[in-house]
Length: 329
Ligand code: TRP
Ligand code: SF4
Image (cartoon, rainbow, N blue to C red; front, side, top):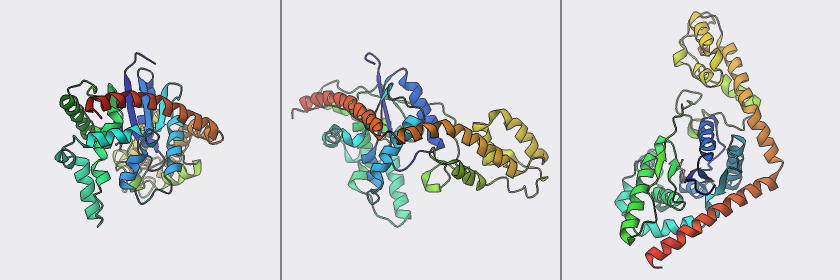
């Protein structure tokens, strides 16, 4: 793995991963072939908003790692670790906080948006920790001095923040410790939620990678179809129907036929959903199998995380020595 550039990414373990995450992980797995790759659970980041719901955090972290691996990350080809196991992230966050101008944090759009959302919900929890979200993320990233960070578009402001911070640190202490990491944007077709909005935990419109066949069936059954179709013979408009969009992901071969049959009023929504349920379950079966295997081997999972932690810690220690030296502490 030496000689390859490093990349790093992570997700907040706020619950199980869903179908929308699958293509993200698939992309990570692909990148693992070409880079020295680090993937982690951002458990400290999860607490920046869910500080009052930490009872499931440990279990969620574990499940996210199981999701990562069963969806295709190969622990032989990348390092999987937990953010909070590498305490150096906290030290770098602290030291970086000394040189981060407050307005840089206050103008990050995700922060402004979240504060607005909290206000709308009648909550007033703009915490110090949450304000520091992008800074902690910068520490996560810069710790590994990566060439790139595979993220979704929503994370671009955080990546830009990270690049500015890297520049500021290097200039301030007259060093060249931190390269400016590039965001690696994947050309991923985004799967909508079962209600055609963005797939998200808060909308309850997701299908988890860990759903049983029965849970998938229930979720597909609840999907809203073209409201113009009351009888089976009513001509439908597949382009406004989420079930149809899903066929494009999980049943590409039959999608054109379904389109024609829906428009002609020759297929019922029930049958269309039944077909989709089958396809999603076929897709999930190998993932379920892997998950079941991992669940029965807790020691293996512990070993994978320990190996990942060790690899991450080794890089983190190298970076922190340089950082302490540069600051003179
Ligand atoms: N903010 C990211 C998200 O919500 C998670 C994250 C935390 C992350 N630290 C990171 C992603 C470092 C990439 C690199 O998806
Ligand atoms: Fe949607 Fe299928 Fe019903 Fe057409 S037949 S409206 S595509 S569920």
